[in-house]
Image (cartoon, rainbow, N blue to C red; front, side, top):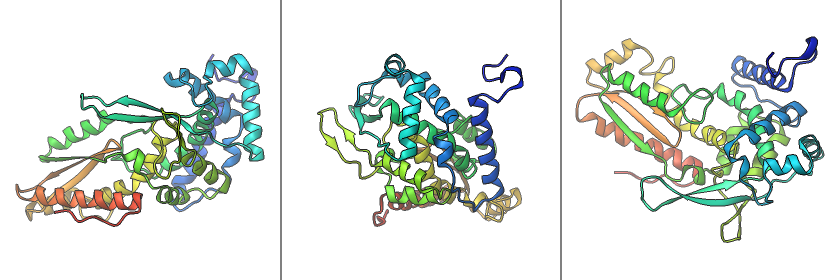
Length: 329
């Protein structure tokens, strides 16, 4: 019998309840592209959601790594017990007393021997559970809006799928590939711009306040200093990949726009017409902080497309960092 099967036809288990909730949210989002959800907080602190969230946190490889409070998932189970821990966490969420603690900074070397380091932010176990609960509720909503050319940090998708797509189009006349990396993407996302995009779909003020609280939780550096987080969402947080996808969806929408119905490259006929006229036909595949654009064109044209793509990245950068656009030559 499956682990989540109800005994003797009883009520469904927590995983089944969460899956049912996610399915309903996704269907409602797809059915109404302009809908803003205003009653999501009850799903976040639902006992089934918190239990599934804790199971995911405890089953993660990082469960043995403590946050600033020094507790691991094993410590929680041995001290107060999982049911008591989740009951206390649920009560704190419901009465509004829950406050995220600063993440614990840990620097790890980047691959390649460059000498550069990647800064990770490790939340406490309680914060990880709440972030996982938020992700369980928010992901099915925003997944309905993400473009098919986005592959990073998404369910049943991976970076290898983006590479496979590039290979696929490479066999169909597309010869040029532009690979662009967004420097310090997680660290640089503007909180105001990100929250604006979250509000496109979420109206529940309690959920919005919870997301913002995690963004502003701060960092305890390796030197023991408390540091405010004015921008960015820490790598290492369970919610961070989803928030990065929400922010970067603005870039996906811009690059994928010509392939949408009615766009300049929406049909094979339109793309064939552009090729006959010597114009490029271009698309993109994103693995999240890296965006690869591919095109078929006469030899001089990819330089112009590369310039346009860099301009697009510049505009996204300005939107997410609230800066004035820089000129690129």
